[in-house]
Length: 207
Image 1 (cartoon, helix red, strand yellow):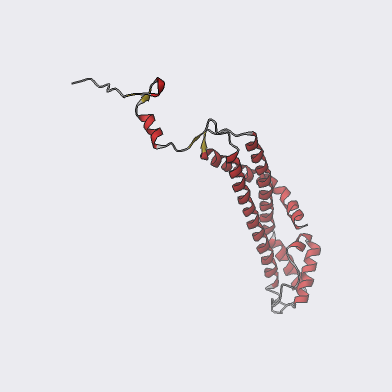
Image 2 (cartoon, rainbow, N blue to C red):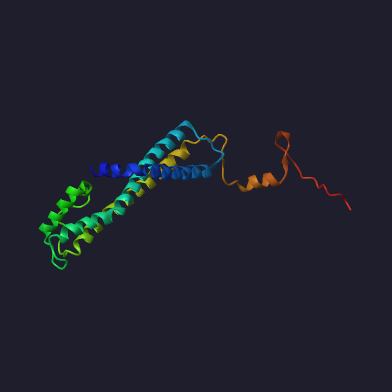
């Protein structure tokens, strides 16, 4: 249910989620092509890339939606403050049971909060501190959620990168760095038919 609420918040951020996923895919292709020079993508490479894009687009959209929820935490804090101020003076301590009542009223107004703030965890706060503590709890939950999404993205990229390299068509590929003998061949003697090499001729005239 919490995931569904985040998805609802993320619909408006779908464009940014897809855009971020495209940037991640560009980085993915850059890493793959950087590993093998002139390597060709096989059918499996494209399938892995398509699956990776879908997974990254979903995760990135969830991240953008979570950031939007964090941005609206001030709105929730304002509502918490309004409810508490109608019952207590700023210096009065709010019992845990009454804090639960405030939470239930806030959930009735904003059903999304049901999955991120629970009762029984706000004790020892006065009326002035309680709204801020509730909003901080919401922000803390969403930040942890974003970190988990980022770790999933990293895991997907690493796994897809390993599989992608294994599925490359390397028949015409060569490693990025040539060996010492390759560089010598490129700058030294030229091969002759039959595998022999012709020595380099000094083209400068004799004095």
